[in-house]
Each structure stands twice: as C-alpha cells, then as structure tokens.
Length: 414
Ligand code: ADP
Ligand code: MG
Image (cartoon, rainbow, N blue to C red):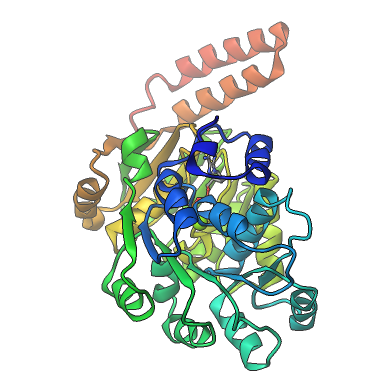
C-alpha cells in the first residue's frame, strides 16, 4: 500500500498520481485529504505557495463527485486567469482515469459564449475567477445551485484583489448544505471574516513554510545606490548565464519598463502584469514555460501562485511592503526538491526591511557584492566552455581568461 492509498484515495487517483511520479503526499495533502474524504466538514487550510494545495482539495473533490451525473458539483474560485487555467489542467490530470469527467475553466477576457457552451456540456467541476463567475451567474449561463463542494483558493489574494463582494454574491447562489474549503497562504482579518461568514465550525490546519522546513532556498541581498538598481540587475543576470528567473517589481509601470529595458539591452525577457491583454499574458507565460524567455518580469499579483519548475533565481528588483509577500516570491524557486536563490536588490533606505523579512522566514540573508566586470567575464567564458566540449576551443578560452586576468589585474577595484 503506498502512502497515497493510506490516505484513503481510490485506484483512479492512485493511477494518475503514479503517472505524475508523485512519491509521497506533501504535508498539506497528508493533513487535509483524509479529513475531506471522511466527512463533509468545512476546512480552513493555511499553507504557502508550492505546498501542493491543488491536489489537497482536488483529490478529495474528484473522489467525492459523481461523474455519471452532469450536474455541477464542485466550484473552485481562484484569483487570476493564469491560476484558474493551471488548476484546471492540474485537476484534469489528476482525474484523467475518471471517464466522463468534465472540468471547465471560467475566466474573464475570453469568449463567454464558448465557456457557457462548455458548462452546458455538463461540467462536474468549474474552476473560476470571481468576476466572470458572477457575470455568468447573473446571466444564468451557469447553475451552481446544486454544488456540494466550494473551494476558495488563495483566499487572501482574492480578498486583496477586492473580490469580497463577488465571492459573497457567488456563494449566495450555492446551497447551504455544502462543504466549503478555504486555502490561503496567510490569515489576515479579511480571511477570518470570510471564514466566519460562510463556514460552519471549520477544521483548521496549518502547514509549515516550505522554505523554512526544507531549506532549499538561500537568500542574498545586494546593497546598491538607488540609481544603480537596473545596472545591478543586469550584472546579476550576466553573472548567471543559465539563469531562469522571475524578477519582481512593485508596480505595473516598473514591471513594463524593466522588461522593455532588458529586451532592448539584448536579454531574453518578458513582462507579466495586469495592464497587458489576456493574449499577451498567455503568450508570455507560454514562452516562459517553454524556456523561450529566461526572465519573467512580473508584479506580485500577476505571478501569484504560478507554478513553473526549475526557476533558478527569484530577483526582488524592489522589495514588497509586506514581508509576507516576500515569502510568496521566494517560494517560486527551490521547488520540487531543487535548490534556488532569492536575491534582493536594496538601496540604503530599504535595507531595514531585510531584518523584518528575516524574522518571518526565520533565516538569515547573506550580504553579497554585485559582481564586477571581470567576474562576469570569467563566468560567461566558463559557461561557454562548459557548453562547447571541444578541447581546442576550451584551451583558447583558458588562454583568453588568463590574459584578461592580467589585463584587469590593476583595474578591478575601480
Ligand atoms: P500550491 O497550490 O500550494 O501553490 P500546487 O498545487 O500548485 O501548489 O503544487 C505545486 C507543484 O507540486 C505542482 O507542480 C504539483 O504538480 C506538484 N505536486 C503536488 N503534490 C505533489 C506531491 N505529493 N509530490 C510531488 N509533487 C507534487
Ligand atoms: Mg495553488
């Protein structure tokens, strides 16, 4: 009996898990799956991004719904279109051995008619952003009066984005007798208000911060003059030729500008923020996932929860106001057993924020220096040598490195 079977999951799901290569349940899965399978209680689960929440509610939901029926039984609300699509794909994979299962994504910026048609074909599970969902309910394009399970995913983020009223409205169209499962990375007052308002004595579980417990992310900061911020960013990228990174800015404007500058300067970058059209956002996410671009410059909201493996570096171009947001950012790297680096570029006036973040992540930052031209040159040549596998060329590179070393000897401390 494997560790997933022990949680009470049935064969159809176990087979899908095996296909996916999951070896053992994550902590949030271990804690919530048996609970949700056994009874119909409400649940509040606090867990950081990247801890496997989708499966924590997805597995039990799949096992509990009736796929023979065409009625919509499960509703998952999530803050952004990107997350909505990600969850939909994930649930489809988890449920691929359930014949007749239909999972439909509902989100703004795409044809409402197409989505309505899909719903009509009989979606047992709907994954939706609150805005479009509310819209479709008011136009009677979707019926959630018989749902049995409602999930509020990334509840803190949905409330941050001002979805309180939409959520209230949506839930008012659902039956009283249902289970509500709320997942959130943090527990601000607004989330407990929602929990009190819509849930009946929910069971609460909390899962340790993934970054702390597994130690996979190291944290570094670089102190620079505010006006040198962009130069510093470029050097950090130059010093890591194989970087695959998310660069966080605070505003949409900064995000756009940094991405544009990087592209102009010959870097492989793209911007992701709320002012772009849905098409542009899809396109940039696709290129990033396919590794056609190395650096995704993003706002916190646009990048929240996005799950791309193999991110080597998270770069905080500007620190967020709230230290908690830093944990979401750094959680983008060091996933699936890999190591990652979270870098922060700070000016003098922000450096005190490092302390408050250290208290939250319970880890210390390493203070580092922005690499100089010589170091970058060396790194780049060595990375080139690594890729070429040709002794003759490598020999030339060695010679070259030695000679520039000579050349730079007296000028490195400029
Ligand atoms: P969260 O919603 O908490 O941010 P996700 O549900 O998006 O996390 O999961 C993050 C990644 O981990 C996904 O790629 C998912 O496929 C993978 N994953 C989930 N559960 C497991 C597991 N038990 N073992 C290995 N990988 C897992
Ligand atoms: Mg998630």
